[in-house]
Length: 399
Image (cartoon, rainbow, N blue to C red; front, side, top):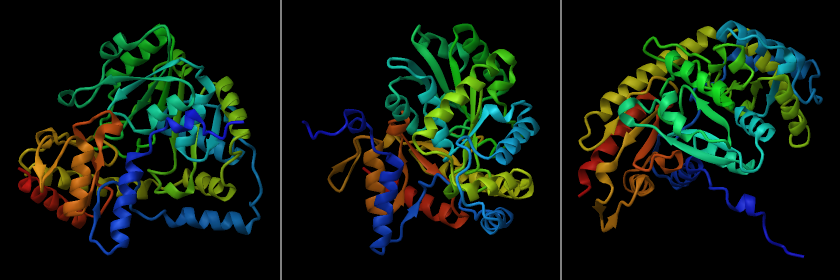
């Protein structure tokens, strides 16, 4: 009998975000003054009314397992939210609650992917997408976007990548890592293409509340019954309600897919945390004031970071429209040397920046953008100014 490890797991690439975060935390533990732009979560506290709801749940004895798909209370509130915010009508039987939106995405892929099925991934994309596709037996197909177009891909740009094996497309708006918001016209074209060619869309809408410049969030499922029947809408509580550690995400879609996702979840994790589900249901009944305050602060930080970065020679930056990330084009620094070390790619840039000037950024290779790094403005204005000053000084020292 062989004591070897799973080939499927051995092929999984470690998260670049978590790797940089681990190095930054090690330096901090050693007493170094590190400024991290790697955060993928709001730096705001969970609103008090949500915390109180969790305490109430414990006081009421809500400490046992719930239905695998989540409590009826929470699924009903999710249906109300989708109708109120997205003009989408779902029944609780068409909704599943998961341990974060990440699990909802993985469950969705597990429910529809067979070995060899291709999944279209507009690039740059969140680094977990290609790994998830591969883990479920699918084939990730990278569809490159252009920085000049704001990384926005039209249906005609996507069409050449569609084959008879195309099963789905992952759509993320607002986008991580570049902050692009997919507009109504582009989404309508993609909806038509998906219906024409017959593939699913998994629409990751976790950043929908964090949009700027008067733009609107549009769900691709809004463009008629045909595309709605081919769309799995994924969202969660982490970003809009500052509930990252509560691990509550959800998906809405065709009843047959949700049933399959529920069966899969029943043998992997079962239902999410019971108290967190109650708190999430209460959160969805309120919170617009807190969400808007957080969005305004992120908007101010976005403008501050962008203006600071524009002053650095040799770096170009795309102004994001949503979420709390920016992508920096650092191609001018690839091949440069510092203290005898040559920067071969974005990973080399990120590692040297952390080592020399104690600033943590995420290399873009894992996002499909090897000449970029991602920075997050989910941190204080003071740290934004100080951190960008360090990046500028680092670039000035490169030769």
